[in-house]
Amino acid sequence: MTVFMLYFTKVRLGSPAREFNVQIDTGSDILWVTCSSCTNCPQTSGLGMELNFFDASSSSTASIVPCSDPLCSNSQIQTDATQCSLQGDHCGYSFQYGDASGTSGYYVSDMLYFDMVLGQSLVTNSSASIVFGCSSHQSGSLATSNQAMDGIFGFGPGGLSVISQLHARGLTPRVFSHCLRGDVNGGGIMVLGEILDPSIVYSPLVPSQPHYNLYLESIALNGQPLPIDPEVFSLSKNRETIIDSGTTLAYLVEEALDPLISSITAMTSQYASPTIHSRLHCYRVYGSVSDIFPTIDFNFAGGASIVLKPDEYLLRDGPLWCLGFEKAKGGVMILGDVVLKDKIFVYDLSHQRIGWAPYDCSMAVNVSVVSGKDEFINSGQWSVSSSTRDILLQLLPAILIQLMFYLSFSAFQLL
Image 1 (spheres, one colour):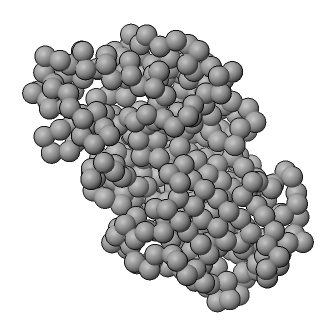
Image 2: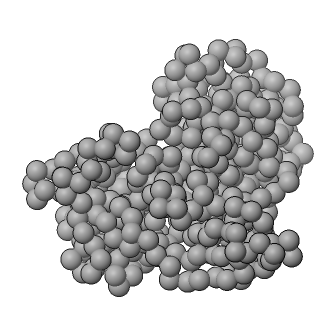
């Protein structure tokens, strides 16, 4: 069974600017788009979109990053994905994702276009020069047409991520936020800045990690902790819990997944019959899932919890309701979109923490611009609180990737 739900946005690159549809992924660092020179890359997409290819020679502002560039040797920026290709003197990269798909190519410097917000003014066609990947080879699912897109937009904490590059240029704070709509209409919002909400709770990040790792302490059903040995979540056991918007499901280690499934099955036995539908644990339900199934609490350091309602972690497939959880590979637990959707998530790298709160992601959000608050209206309009008007000259710009993500499908697809 394949469960697939994809959030993506449009980015504008090059001169003249061209649009590319790229998947949002907090589990990786670099932004890359497919090169026009790629020979094995998909030419069509099963997502119903026209694929675009980046051609550095057609952009007047593009330059290929050479091996002599500090990018290929600076240890503060360099990643395992960075390598020097003597062929053509290109600073190359090679990156593999958790699903065994991969991409390789070389780095290009070119213009990224965005909308900049300063006080009441929405200034369009702002730009900054950034380094991103030009993919000349793809493998695994990336090489197939089913889920083909123009690239992937990595929002990881590494030095090559767009958020790190723009912060280094003094253009954005070192914080970004998203709110992913989980209904059949999809959508959401991505902000290079901090979404504000009084109900947001924060938990510290595990320091010096290449991903957004949190300290998971326990899992509970309806507030009652599951019988899971705390050592299961111990970092000393090489266990990790990663927040990753590029993953659809949640992946738990066996010692946590088994008691979760067995407890849910026992609690719902009167109204739900368990069955295995391919790899997922599913139920034939006789009644309302909201009344039958428990809430699931993921409890983190600092007293912060992510609480999932039944309709958030259950995926509908005809007469079946399936748990959005699978067994993790190794000791790495991943909390994907089934956990992240219908919530504000704030990645505060300056304070090394992540915050979240339940939210209707079709609604406007309040965004911090260093000091004061701006309100983002989904149509792209802005309004500014009266307390902000007096200090407009003190505000630094916030940059937003505007007008939402889009779901590639109108619902989860179970194959």
